[in-house]
Length: 403
Image 1 (tube, rainbow, N blue to C red):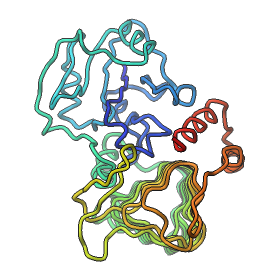
Image 2 (image 1 turned 180 degrees about the horizontal axis):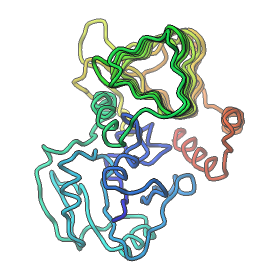
Image 3 (image 1 turned 90 degrees about the vertical axis):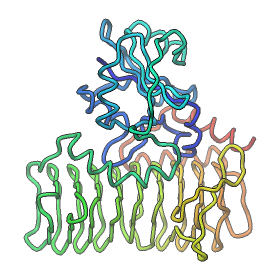
Image 4 (image 1 turned 180 degrees about the vertical axis):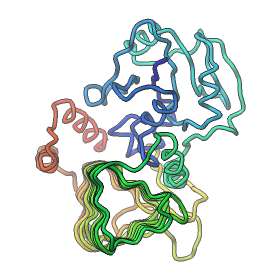
């Protein structure tokens, strides 16, 4: 069977990260949600079949469906635990698995999948409904679930993807590797002299082409993905993922970087979620704990209302293409939208709309043409071309932020 993805109404809880990507493209552990499911169901890497929101069409692939091959439809908020994978495999064509008033998975013929993709929505109304308890399944319900589940997903991905040591890795004999059997170093990766990798508390994954700089300290579970660089002297720990083609320096704990984002200098970042193409200026620091140790309230992206999270540790949630200047201080539970520029010497607001410049005592719209110029310049440095569809997506986000 082929793996297909749909989103439900809770996708908006994951804004601003899902403003610029489908839910299945969220990274947690080592891989994205779609990569995990494909591996769990035995599907080879390739095109991803998904129903896309209108503004994401053209930016992300949507198919194609292979004729005469049944389709397993996955609610992309659910993680591929063994229990859920087993239930998905057991589904008959024309049936769907539901629990707690939500569709978890379904199985259809290829022709039905093509119709759903063409219509831009999944229609489960004519399927046989199989009720189940959701307690044995793991689902993402809130933003903070991502970093809280990140450590266990790194462990699961080591097994799920069958990760072993690669070829031609360069590991200095002056590096210290504790718990070597749980340290997985990919093809052409490099670990420089004086680096300390401690896998006694969880596995450490160093992806193909990645570099761990001299004197850096990594304490597992930690994932450093393909072609990323850990700067010399960095301290990375507590279930952190540095996604592909990132730079990581300073102190980082229990944080997920998606890809192409940089925090190359000193400063602390903890219990945070960072999108693509973000950059942190030197000595940017994130608060992740209130001074009175009370639980944290976040501002809901859509309603603008304060929401009690019940969580004691939440740092910063940052959408794609946002940046901070040197010495920026980010308050506990800050949510920053897409393409923001933060250079205030004071604490910025805890909710920063997309396409906003934040200076000291001033917030103003980021001119769209200027923002796109910066995007093009940043992406060109990594040999990634900006497409018309990508610009169109960003223009929609910019317009929505002004409403």
